[in-house]
Amino acid sequence: MEKIINGRALARKIRQEIKEEIYSKHLRPSLAVVLVGEDPASQLYVGLKKRACQEVGIDFHEYLLAENSSAKQVLEVINFLNKDETVDAILIQLPLPEHLDADEIIFAMDPKKDVDGFHPSSIKNFLDNQSSFVPGLALGIYKLIASTEENLANKKATIVAKSNILYQPVAKLLNDQGVTTTIVHPGDKDLTNRCQEADILISACGKAFFITADLVKDGATVIDVGTNQVGDHTVGDVDYSAVFSKVKYITPVPGGVGPMTVAMLLYNALRLTED
Image: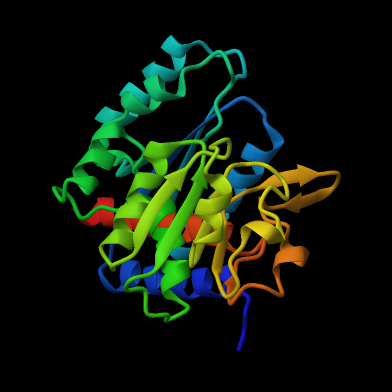
């Protein structure tokens, strides 16, 4: 049995399906990305998204703003994109420079063009069953779990995350499959118990090697959302080598959640074009 959940292979399959759908329906989806500043990681991610869009046939437009851009300047760009009928989808590349309020910037987007699904109304509509549009990060995580073909009914899941609201859509997707899901802050006093009882453990706390072997239940499925730099290496939140022998399935970093997040970006850009 293959323990490693290969996000790259799954994402490749999804990208091919998107490419074929765009071609067969003669569509021209259009995605605009707003990048503020020159953060190397953000520049890298935008480059990956640009290549992925070009590969499947999505028009990609970059709006590159200086590090010291004011909130007013960023909001003017977003307002322009909201009104631009040739733009189907908008992405704000996070994190933003510290002087900008990310919530304010995201809230300024037209929810109908919110490709990540991070707008409060996008999340609320999904959680309230008012919309079938699933935030891309949540959908990518769920598809990785579903790819194991495990029966999810009556399982327990724990999501370790600093942001409750961003991971509520993941919890909903799992709950809908009969999984009892808890979101726990990495500083919570009950963290150890919550992790140790989890059949599915999702870590998105942004701390290298935070999830150690003693926190992982034997036979668990572990999804590592973390992306951390340790020297020249990119590592996850999970102490991968220490945990590997205990798990049934695990995503690597890199090569797990990251490629799926990009694939879901393409998927949602196509959805916004068709809606």
